[in-house]
Length: 297
Image (cartoon, rainbow, N blue to C red; front, side):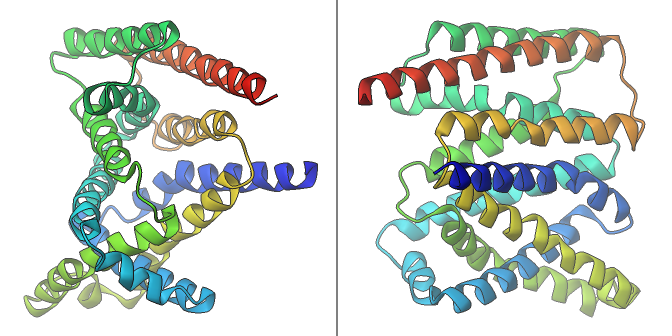
């Protein structure tokens, strides 16, 4: 059992490291517009999933998921949410807003708590209420100090929170469901790339090397999801929640050290507030896990 836990931890750390360092990759392809990057990511990710599911013998469940009852509508909504999130993140990195992007993924779990309250009537614990208050304080500081709300952070946290809300209760696992989402998005992505090519633009005309580089974007979608799925079957929910903060921490580190983005007084006040809120949220996760463990024993 200990070996299983260690392998689970290694898998989730690897997944979060890939996600967290993805800004280095997207920053290298600033010459490719974000919408085109998104289209390539969808197409090559779908190819990755089709090969994976063919090896696993799960192509039939994939097609069944897309054509099952009310699932296509839910998958379509999830596709819209996650593609908006991907597009927003790529645009943020390419336009010098990687710091704001990392802030968005820090506050996402707190946004998810609020969405759970609105959609399902889930109650806040005292620690969660305090964590949300700290996050709101950070947003208020940035809004007053910078003269506008941190729209990029709120957009990324909101779209990812809505994505999680849509997928809550979906019977399919994370890898299969994302495969279905890319399957629905693929016609639009292929249509966009074809339109660019016909009109004399796009990476296909610019250079074969650029296309080869864009193919690697599938790795930032498929590989970490497979690792996350592996870890989720072996680790407690609290452990998954805690380790996932490695992702925005690496994003923030890349923004500061590699992109050398400005970090002003507003950020110096807002980020510690966010980190304090995250610490309280993680403490609440740990406390709830202990209560569940005690109840089971």
